[in-house]
Image (tube, rainbow, N blue to C red; front, side, top):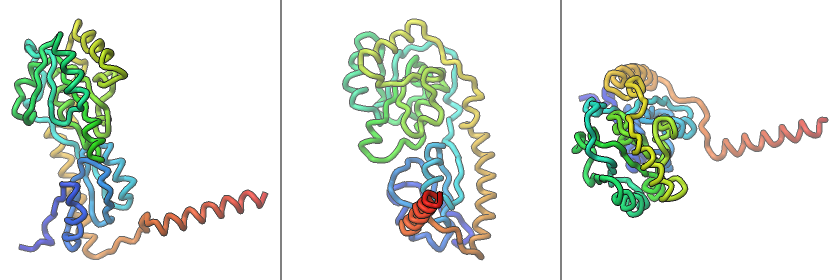
Length: 274
């Protein structure tokens, strides 16, 4: 019954500024996926992010808030069963670029068995296990929306199933994708070059050399363990916040202009002192 004894979790980026204002008197945290929404948050709002990419964004944007890294989970159903794969190429239509859907896929369909998913990924775990390649290109999707790819779970799920992944490496995807080593960069130079590379890998196809240790960070056991540490930290913080005000100066435009002026004056003094 006491709202001061609970923690409110804000998630949908577009609504966070209004929610943060309404929850000003209470304990609220922001669960951040995408970045670049354009808003700032006061130091009283802790942030936990799903990727290091978003972690870095908020580390600069909200430097005096508590910030944590808590990645998304890969469901246990996504794992390499080492079975015969009937699908050559799998594509998830949602978030895919027009280049991928309208140019690369038609070119590949002339030489490969291509399966396009038009619904939510989680409905098709069986398909993700039976594919050889997974193609993902979300850079255009996020550029049109003006925000970032928060995590990019689908390529990692495909990797966990033993698939070769051709993907864009924008934003949160760069957390774990390493082109040339655990994946391949898609939309590289030309459609012909993409087709050539995919077919070349297909000729001697093997599962990528990635151990389960790579995915341990994103499995339930690790996430629950990290979440408990974060909750303990948040409880300490909210207890402290009840009796103490934040007193670290913020990066306001006026303060930044003042610091810039001081820096210029200091450099000029140093220059003419010589």
